[in-house]
Image 1 (tube, one colour):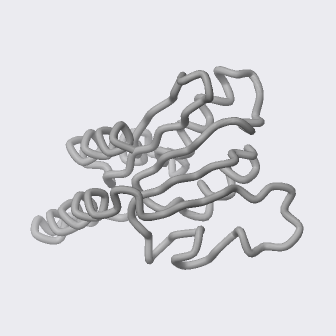
Image 2 (cartoon, helix red, strand yellow):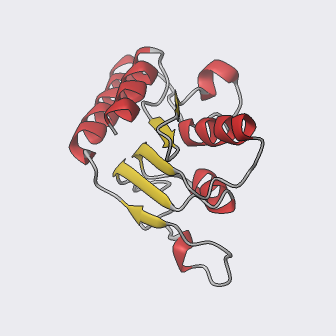
Length: 150
């Protein structure tokens, strides 16, 4: 989670919503990235989406059945869905997302019947650090009159 927080700090410095993610394989190899939606102009450039895609490309397989995803913010519906489709067995996140969270805060995709995969999801890992960074980012946006949208 520390590496994911480093990525979130980098996103903050780049003017992106400060979310970082790391996907770890059992061998110790990992993929890390940060939100890049402003940079790429693409709505799918969330940190979780980027690391899942990078891992699948590197492995040549969309099934990530032995990996753990760490992210500094509760995944949104898009990222949660991608994690489930990729069959990631463990997801650990920091702060809860009361606007877009898909693992319990707004909706809970784990309550959907008939999915072929239900990951073990734990929230609250270093949540205070993630939350402070997010609040600082959005407070700065309000102070500068910026139209920040996530």
